[in-house]
Length: 191
Image 1: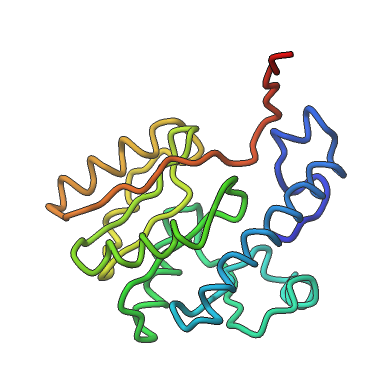
Image 2: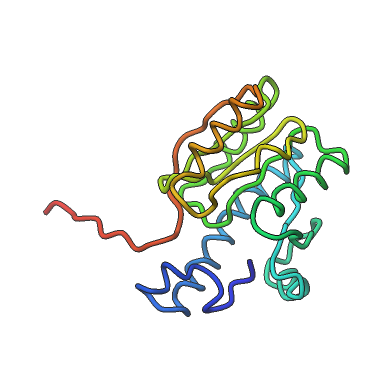
């Protein structure tokens, strides 16, 4: 998403305000894109920015300044949007395709590379998030039914995804768990 105050990280904004939430989101997106670009520059992966809202294409291209494909999100809800993005990637010749959240904390090139390697011998790879969702999902072939019936933005996303994987009889590998930028967490320090 384009980092417009009041349009991104609304849960976080309740604590830090719209402007600060948008700034934190923007900084994290830029950090994670640097990680992905390090793999892209070594020809480990191609990069496609799937963005929203569609009318912000030029603003997003100007902000990110990356020479890659920019694809607007299409569909009602996250299920349809993921189906569309994966469908487009496989239709264009992708062999192993991953979708990554833009607001993941602790994302590294090694984690992404492990995901791609897992797709050599598995149908699905999942990077679980602390909130019960996932920060990464990858497929070795198009599986649109994997995204049906998921209660997005709830703690049920991951369990429902694993159930769909089982029902579709797909093999999978799970990566390490990471957090995302949704709420301010106060961590006590020991003096």
